[in-house]
Image 1 (cartoon, rainbow, N blue to C red):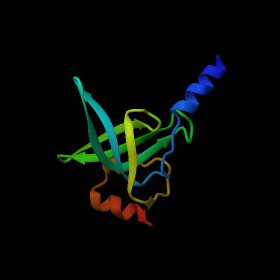
Image 2: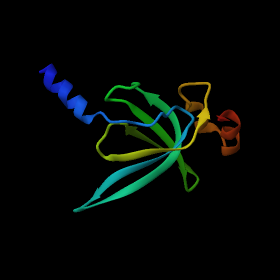
Image 3: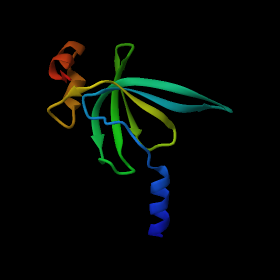
Length: 115
């Protein structure tokens, strides 16, 4: 049973760009609408990354839509994700940036150091 699982993991695993918390990313995700399939783009700040390099690795992306903060969790090795593009690299001093939920855009820029 474990050989089948290992083979499945090898097929699903794919190359991902070097991303860390604090980076601004653009994620292209396939969305099915009936018979059609289109690409939905989400651009936001990575506030958490979990499970390292494993097949179950996820990132939490926060974006502001119509003055409301929206967080989405994306599995990195999902076949629904077409590509992940790093828009801006930043250096964060913490691995989980949940405290940014209560901050304004100006305060967030001050907290993150741009490389």
